Image (tube, rainbow, N blue to C red):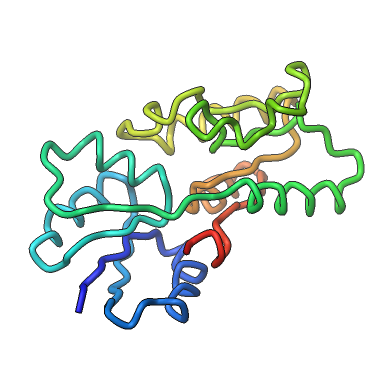
Length: 193
């Protein structure tokens, strides 16, 4: 029996646990909630003697661990938002908000490494949404949430964005005091296979 630790935020626990029904018979999943990227790192290091491997609920904690743990103690993987997951969320917003303009949105999970979820293939550069940074490596720093929140709040206050799409599951709660309600995008069960 393989013991797999699934590191996720409390806000992602519900959709991550949907995978339980698809779990291979030879695997045992233990769900481990974390509060910050630094906390995820501590849990990974302290939990390594007890598990055969770890899966992170997203790419950002996965890359954070890769960049901030000298020698990986156990194999790691992550659940990725696929283009179909992003375009489903995008379509839902466009349906509900007919005046939606992509250039007035902020998307915190678009970067070179995921080919901007294919937006560059059809969207003119002038209509491109705001992003946190072009490379995922910039997401592996301590205090990431503060950086992203600062950028979003600044754009919001200046009236440059109307919509936020996030992959950071703690972000909706953190943006509530500013009156910002982001769309949290997560992988579907099919994407997690």
